[in-house]
Each structure stands twice: as structure tokens, then as C-alpha cells.
Length: 125
Figure 1 (spheres, rainbow, N blue to C red):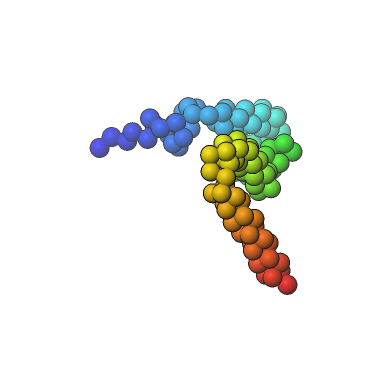
Figure 2: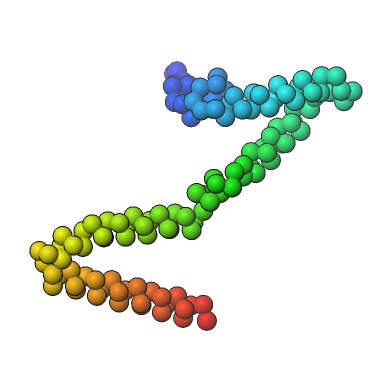
């Protein structure tokens, strides 16, 4: 049986060959820089320590903008703005053709939001 894992861009085999994304190239640069700096040192190059340092370096958030874009608040804000935008486009159209249905839906949404807020306050107490 033949292993076809190398065909997938995010497989380990493809990653080790340098295919897929730039993670392998970043690691390779870090590894070569570590070997070059430790070449003249008396203690030599420790691959295990180098890998641990690289892992801790990768775990650290690199950019404040990335942290903000990945935050739960930003995702909720984007969802809210998307729904608001879609509602702003849809409501006038539906309101012209079926004003009673649009009014009932808006009232139901308002009541649902109030009930959710009330339950949230009750849980916090």
C-alpha cells in the first residue's frame, strides 16, 4: 500500500518537504540561525532546547492586530454588523410589501432581546 499523504498540503510529509505554507521555511531559518550562532560556541547546538524555544516563540502572539481580529468580541461585532447591514437592506423591502408581518417580526425580536437580557441579569445575581 502506498502512502499518499504527501499529496495533501497540510500533511506532515508535505510540511517536512517544505510544501504547503511558510511554517517550514520559518522553522528552517530559525534552525539554521541557531546552528550558525552555536557553531563557534563551546557547548554546541542543542536541537531539543532549540525546538522548545521555537515552540514558545510560536505560541506568543506576534501582532496586536491579529489578537484583536481573533478575539471573541470582534467576531460578535462582525456578526452584529453583518446582521444589521442585511436587516437594513431587507426591512424596507419587506416593510413596503408586508408591513404587518414586518412589524410583528420586529416586535418579536425586541421581546426576545429583552427576555435574553433579563435572563442574563438573573443568572449573574
